[in-house]
Length: 124
Image (cartoon, rainbow, N blue to C red; front, side, top):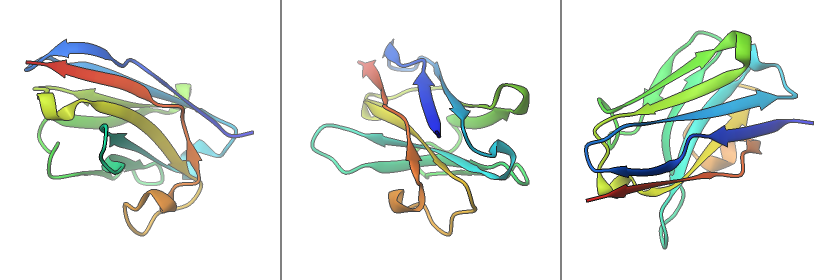
């Protein structure tokens, strides 16, 4: 059974930092794509970033480029999202998502597996 479990959400002041973790199990981590999405109240789910485990390539939405960094720890089958210079507009539920194959775009439908989500709240 594939499982993705997120950790690390919380409340932080604007300008602060948080690190989210996504622990993956049940699929071949080295061949996967692991991504982060977020969804704010009343808004559609938005792609944030993903890492391709086959070659380590990383991709970011323009809204977080330069502030967020995605990385992975093979030994722990865990992907991290380091979020710096947080803004109030980053407030959302953050979801970890996985695909067992390369993805062709950042549509949520490209990802087969989802975590339960973790709340990130940035206060002004």
